[in-house]
Image 1 (cartoon, rainbow, N blue to C red):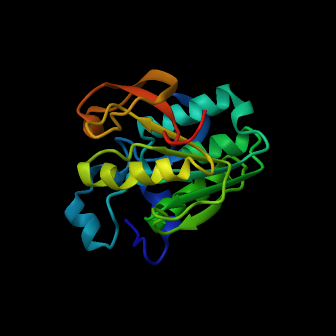
Image 2 (cartoon, rainbow, N blue to C red):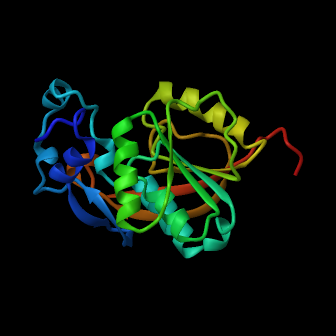
Length: 222
């Protein structure tokens, strides 16, 4: 493996393969597969070479369903400014760009995720602007905010769901969740629901019942 700090794009290319997510075969991505080195790497080794767990190397079920819904319903993003939060590999952002969004930004706290998103955007001949850092607590300037697979622990859900509801006062907000324990328990509008194939290595399951919700501030008038 090459060192990601000195050549992040090279590290991604060397440790992934160009593949497609099961639910979104139209989009090619640099992904970890059973034949790529990063799939076998332990967290200890990744820490030693200065890299966070490579969440960007996988097409998580939430991002797959967001991307699938966007590609099947491009009117939801056409001509709009879209922001993909916790973008990972950038799958949802790429789908938005391919579907006619006027401007697409991708945010992640992991610089490697932004590097992977840029490589994947180039692979699909679209342009996505990177937005580094933690945006929680800010009010992003966009028309549509999409986010998936973030309610994986209690602390994260407790921090992010109130922020998303605050954001929903100024923009449309979609949250996609594959049945995580800490997903919002409040009634939410369901945009689509689908079973997404996953791997035993990542999810200890072969599929996840995944739901794309539209959030709104419950204090706002209808």
